[in-house]
Length: 181
Image (cartoon, rainbow, N blue to C red; front, side, top):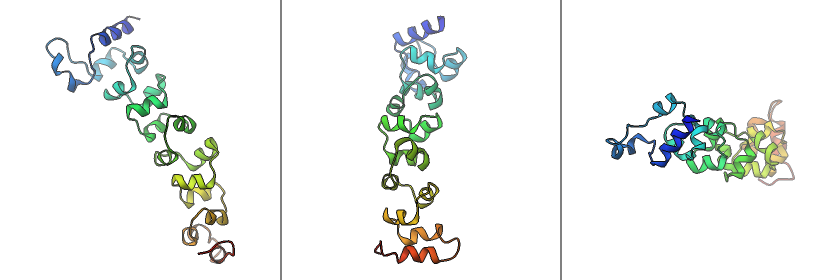
């Protein structure tokens, strides 16, 4: 409890943890660094309880996993400037990331898989394609060549993935009466 009281006192005197901004306080108070915070057991959860934001904690090198453990939401981390990749590292699920305002495209670029996104959001082939997933990702989900062709992939896009027994499958896709090239 003493640690929490010390944190509240720090907050009340408006000391910013960023050492670059501490120069105006240099004569009045000692410099507060990440090392000092950690040495005094100021973890992210205690700092959150004392009123510090995810952005303030990010500035002193707390990572997304520490902030998630402290109870910060995906929206709070997004506002603080964390990327989908950093938040994926912390274990935030796809659904929570979408609720925080991230687009399917940003989640794909952040490392969320086609499988994770399809399962969590019930995305269609077209939505997965719009997010930026390529033939290899979509084929691993079980989509058939005809479906992929219908989603806008060219026969050339499909050729490397559907010719295990020769060129027969490729030519079937290329000259299918369902699709015009």
